[in-house]
Image 1 (cartoon, rainbow, N blue to C red):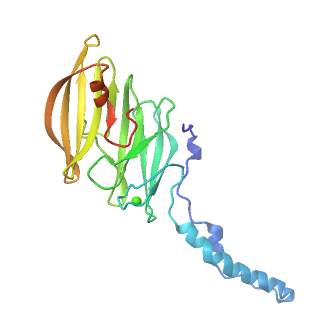
Image 2 (image 1 turned 90 degrees about the horizontal axis):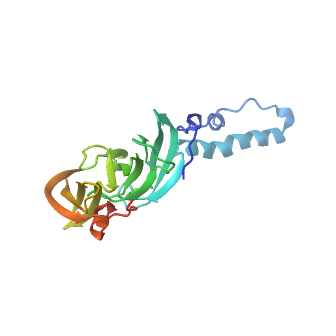
Image 3 (image 1 turned 180 degrees about the vertical axis):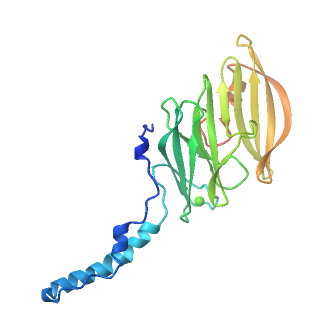
Length: 255
Ligand SMILES: [Ca+2]
């Protein structure tokens, strides 16, 4: 579980180390009366640090807690994903999501939960959701009365961007299963095309069955395209309901 950090503790991109840079500047005049010790020390300060420190300071990196090592940019090499809290927006914590690719590219995105996180860490998982190579990063966006909300980030054109849910057309991906509502996503690939079936239904809490709408979206030309919708009846507290509630078909927890 990620514990809250004060805003003052938020990490920022570290500026180049000024002390490292100083080692590249010409040395002061050497007092020749102290040769050879003074001369050797001066030469050492000129040569050794100057070769290493500037390169280290210039290498971009992610700050914060590493939550995953998984391929996000699609080159099949594992990248590093970090999340750290950087304060609050209104009442909900704000997080910085950062990905550093195996080739050294770094991208950050700021994310704020829409609802209380109830003490849960923001990182939910990484999985290939859409039709582009590389895993999406799923962050918790909070809990409703019985719903769970998520934000999805993906790597596009060298940086992290948020991907809207196909059904809500907003950043809010959410799942639910209660006496009155059921909602979930099931992903699959067929003949090289990526699909997700979004299920949503409501009922009277005392009724034994849901009437749900299942809409299929296919990944096409960089986005989710709405396809057909069918209406089906499923029994509450059944294998059928469990099969549509939450996340399915991807390497994410169901709920
Ligand atoms: Ca990679």
